[in-house]
Image (cartoon, rainbow, N blue to C red; front, side, top):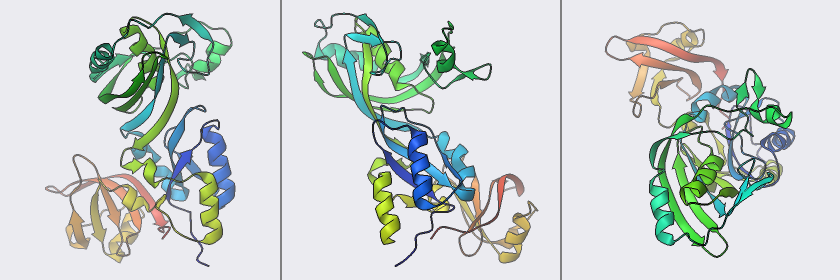
Length: 312
């Protein structure tokens, strides 16, 4: 039986409803036998969907994936507002919604497109003076989080039931967007109140839920030794980055943060947009990430890895 090496990898998990991201990562750690695991953006306990984990030395790459745009699907429930802006909170307001029409729904969704000001929920992991906002609220403190700019690229109303007030939606947005706040503000825009009834992360950057597996399914993979689309080489995960393959001699230099010359380059592929370059040895092992000015041949290392062997 082939043994799958989960070290130095990016792993795509389908998180279930009712479990925290921390609990899912802890179970994954026990199953794959890798101690160092980081995740690239938590999901609330009531939410499900894509949770991106990085293991071993690849955990240092989490900063790049945290910056990615996201796609979510879910249900907004009209008529009831909660203190957390989702179904887990205490009801703080109720208002009728029978005046809402299909045209109102679609017009309201258009108002959220582009760069908008958004006030995060008080019950959030954002920190005030080093302490989580949610912890301060639970201690009875009166807090107010500053609004911030987020970008909504797409806000589609997929289905709706005006009798029950359930609005099925799909949103593509920038990092740091609180869909709970979108749900609350959507209700206000419609002349009523609302909260987020369900949420599922469908995509994060180039990673998609279709390629993810539940932790239980990953256990089956560990037992069988079969590969799956849920485990990704770090270099494949950084698909938008440029590629620079260098000689073995240069790889040794780079692993110590030293300069290398154009003559050390075996091949080069330009990055997408303004992304940096990944520097690879002849076997495709990731040895560094850097900005490179190709005209002046100036190299600015973001991070250097000492012999990060690919998982497969």
